[in-house]
Length: 78
Image (cartoon, rainbow, N blue to C red; front, side):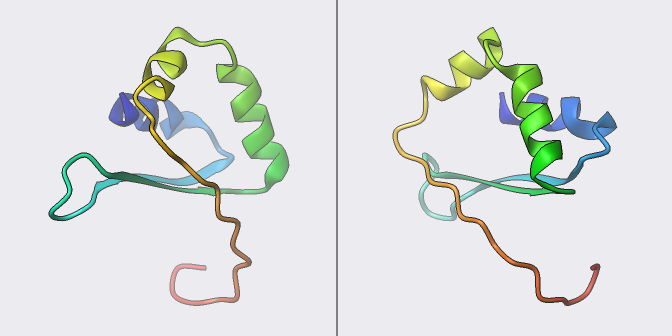
């Protein structure tokens, strides 16, 4: 489901990064890393998927989640 979501974001100019990873040694733990141009781009994307059956199906599998906001300081690829 998350890989399908990533494919749908290919044409979204506001989504700069959307990675899905499985935690090594814990196959039931999935990490999603997202990078958005700005909060408005993220909000617009969330508005487009609000009420989606596929989003509801994916969220039904989620036991726990948290959002961690970061402030970019620099580095390679910036």
